[in-house]
Length: 330
Ligand SMILES: Nc1nc2c(ncn2[C@@H]2O[C@H](COP(=O)(O)OP(=O)(O)OP(=O)(O)O)[C@@H](O)[C@H]2O)c(=O)[nH]1
Ligand SMILES: [Mg+2]
Image (cartoon, rainbow, N blue to C red; front, side, top):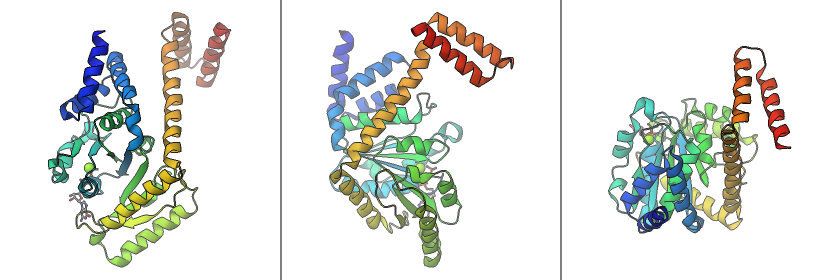
C-alpha cells in the first residue's frame, strides 16, 4: 500500500514538472535493483499517453565533432518556439575519460540557463542495464515531466550509436569532412539507422572542399538500402560555432517530423522499437529466470565446465542445454 501511495506521489511530482523529482527518478531508473526498476516501470506505464505528443532526436558522431555545440543551436531554436526541451547526454566512454560532463555544461552554456530546458549529463556509472534500456526510460520520464522534445547526444563508439537510434524518432549523424569519419560511418552501416547527415566545422575548409565532402558522402550512401522510414537521406553542411546552415538543418528536422507523422511512419517506427525491445528483454529475462531453477542451473553449470575443459563445443553445449529444457517442459 505504501508502495502504491509513493508511486502516485512521485508520479504527481514528476507530472507537475518538478526537476528534482525528474533527476531523482532518472537516477532510480539507472539502478540495478529490481524494486527500483519495478517502481520506475509503474510510473512510466501510468504516464504512457504522454509519449504520443513528443519528438525524440538522437545526435551521434565521433568524439569532438561538435555535437554539444550543435545541440546548443538546435536547442535554442526549439525552445524559442515555446517548447520544453530535455537534453540527455549518453557517453559510453565517460567512465574512462570523465571529460564530457564538464564539457557539455560549458558548451551548452546559454540554453542551460533557460527555464524550459533540462540538461542531464551522462551518469557516472556504467550502463549496466544497457544504453538503450536506460535511455528509453530517461526519455519517457522526461516526457511525463512535460518535455515536448528530447534530444539524446551519444558518442559514436561501437554499439552505442545503433542502440540510441533504437529509442529515438530521428537520428542525426554528425561528422567532420576529411577526418575519415564518413567512411568509418558508412562501413559501420549508418544507413541502417541514420536519418540525416551533418558535416560540421565547414568554416575551417574551403567551399569547394566542403561540397566535395558532401558529394563523396552522398555517393557512398547512394547505393545502400533506403532508410526504414523511407525518407530521402541528405547531407547538410554547417558550422555550429558560426551558426551557419542551422536554419537549413532546422527545416530538415521539421520536414522529417511533418512527413513521417503524416504518413504514420513515426507511429510505426515506435511500434517496431517497442516490439524489438520486448523481444530483446524477454530473451534476456527468460535465460536469467531459467537459471533460478535448480535443475536448469545445475545442468548449465555442468555444461559450462565441460566447455571450459574443451570437452564440449559451445554450439553443442547450447544444443544440449536447449534439449534439456524442452524435455523438462514437455
Ligand atoms: N571550428 C569549429 N569548431 C567547432 C565547431 N563546432 C564545435 N567546435 C569545437 O569543437 C570542439 C568540440 O565540440 P563539442 O561540441 O564539445 O563536440 P562533441 O562532439 O559534443 O564532443 P564530445 O561530447 O566530447 O564527443 C570544441 O572546442 C568546439 O568549440 C564548428 O562549427 N567549427
Ligand atoms: Mg558533447
